[in-house]
Length: 113
Length: 115
Picture 1 (tube, rainbow over the protein chains, first blue to last red):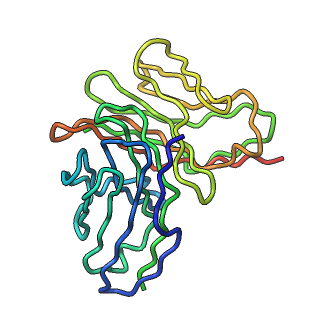
Picture 2: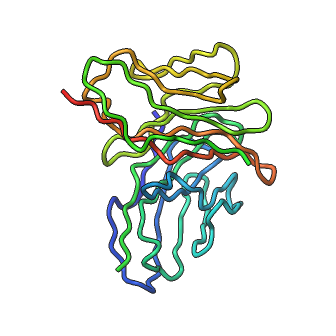
């Protein structure tokens, strides 16, 4: 079974702090994704990566950056956290660009105070 | 732009009754459609997909979905609901942008199955 793990289930940070969310997958997948999930808005794509050191902006990249130094690990960085970034963050991976199925981690609920 | 719409925020059904969770889509070309489920405090899990072929697609946990091209719909169904089916359900469509593929998700429908 594919396993996607995220470093924290719950995180509380202060406004202005730099925040790192880590995601690791164990199935040698090429593609990795970061989404945020908000009630009434569904899932929105922040960034994705199709290879090591490669990244593409999604629908809502503002205020975020990403890093993929190793194939199995994809990090989401909030350079200066703001209260409007309080959300559930979901990481996902898929085998290939044309893969039909994405595998999701359990999510990190981030609260910025 | 490719999109999906889930018109119901919540669906309530009694255990043992059939359930339907609605999804309509807007795409150019042939749609690739998906259903995912999110149980409480869990990530999303893939349920089923429609790529081509039979309009009735069978998936995990006894769920199925019916693709209807004329109505641009892809409704999720189950003949007999279980309390354990209570969860948040997302419809999604595959979209192409900037040379890449991505999934575009609906806003989600909460299914509540009462005993």
